[in-house]
Amino acid sequence: MQKLFFSIFIFSLTFAQNSVVRQFSKAFADVAEKAKPAVVTIITDKVVSLNQFDDFGYFFFQPNMPRQREYKTNALGSGVIVDARKGYILTNNHVVDDMDGIRVKLIDKREYDAVIIGTDPKTDLAVLQIEADNLKDIKLGNSDGIRVGEWVMAVGSPFSENLSHTVTTGIISALGRSNIMNAQSYEDFIQTDAAINPGNSGGALLNMDGELIGINTAIATGGYEKSNRGVGFAIPSNMSERIMSDLIDKGYVTRAWLGVYIQEIDSEIAEAFDIDTRNGALITDVVEDSPAENAGIQEGDVIVAFNGKTIANPANLKNVVSLTAPESKNKVRLVRDGKTKVMDVVLKELPDSPQEFATKKTNSKKSFGLELRKINKSIKDKYDIDGDDVLVVTGIDTNGEAYAEGIREGDVIKNVGTRRVKTVKEFNRLIEKARKKGTVLLLVKKPSGGSRFFTLKFN
Image (cartoon, rainbow, N blue to C red; front, side, top):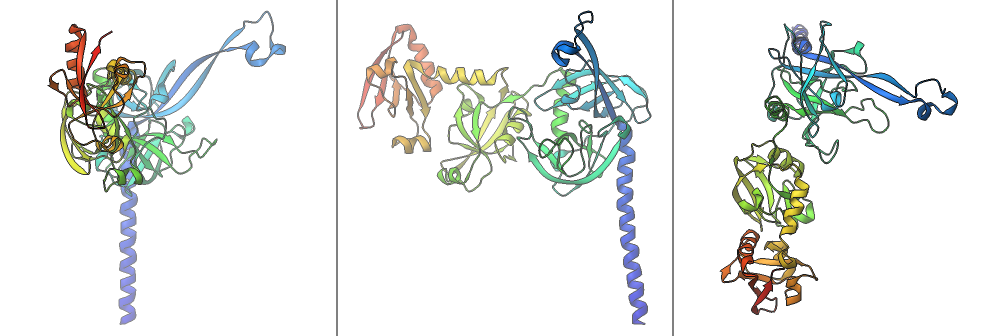
């Protein structure tokens, strides 16, 4: 009787296991079947002119032959139809960048010429459009809801046109990867071990509901090899959707700007700033008249959350801010001197040349050769200053008017004329107001404790 019971138990267990495997296998097959018609192969043409003398050497050059010859080169990539009615296709910028011709090949072998609706090199995304009937598209999923360890499927055309619509599976092995391509890019990659190879760029990364959660973009090659080494990266669908919307509506991407310089938080910084986390972004400088300065954000602040989203690192903050609508009001949670503060920040649109803008604004702080900073913990410790609402001279031009009159680094600026000043913005506004008079009075407190007025002349 016991043997019979045991045999029945083993049979039931085996049957249940086989049933689960069949269901699991069917789920993958269903996702692939639904997705493949919406994934396309992108074939690009580039006409290259070669100089025979330069490229092949003197002995191959014949005077009666033309010195220039044109060669047509082909490249391969993938794309995802995201709007069947309008024919919009999402792919990578590097797949279509600087190409002379773009053709899209569907799974049913139909081919169409494609036009570029818009490109965004900073996220490596591009939107194409074709005119075709009976297209299938893929629904965009919520990439913010995915977790490490979830099963995913990649679909694309690795290596050659003959291998189009190849399906590979794996798991999400990491989230929020950055500094994969270059420091100027906006990167928040999904990392996966689903096989992604050259030609897969622009293809689909799908969850088990068949939704598009990423655009396959890059692989870790481990050196000179161009093939996959087990790690691939995809642009999250939420970022892709935001970029795609701007490219379709405007032809370019609108990004928001906070106006800060930021760096990573290590153990030493965490200890110095009395914070118990290594997450967040440390503010090392604030651009004058930026959204950050207008909101009261200071050097030494650590931004730990933006609109309720935890900030993991500077790259994360950069992405979150850039994808937020300009002129929107946002809640920023930060740590200052060991205490948590929440501030309202109204973002502005990113300037065309933010680096030049930041440099220009920083230099404008140096009225009379003075560089001023609102006090924070690090400045207070450096110059041994008491008080919280003061401006400190943190840099001075030895050839400037202020230095000649006796103002030095570490001095505290208390007043401009008879007006108390607490921010750099206030200081600059009062300085400009006094410019018409030709001179201005500054009340300066010295480290020794005494205060006196200094008369400075405008050039």
